[in-house]
Length: 177
Image 1 (cartoon, helix red, strand yellow):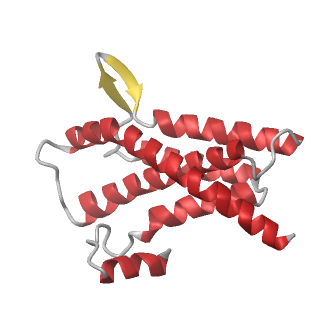
Image 2: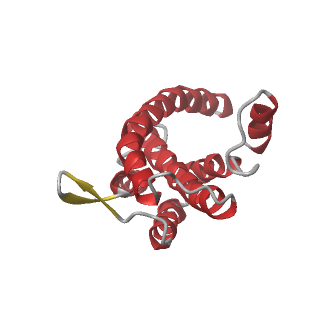
């Protein structure tokens, strides 16, 4: 991931997080790796820890108003941890195989959302704090925009990730048999 990010930079991708752009990708890979290697508590605990970190940061929104109703900013992240927890529980009981589309999709969902919250943490600490970039309308307006944009973007990445990961994992597992 680190090498891939630096290759991206060499090919013209803009540097966003002061050369720490690999961290959200690394977080996604760690969550997926923990889930697929049977480290169930860590696979759920690590994303939960990231949610706590983000929530405790004073620049982070906890709630966003949607039609007058307060909705947790991290609503989709919380659902992803629940989905992953369920998949890991069923896998532990033997009711769900690690290479099943449902398990792969649950891991893709949780790892994608974990990478997203890691990117949010990076954004707050690198862009806002270290680089001193303050959004024109303030932090809350920035996060409100992100709140409405991220669900569609993340669903796209989850679906695409699961569609790519499932056949790759199946092919790799067959080669090792």
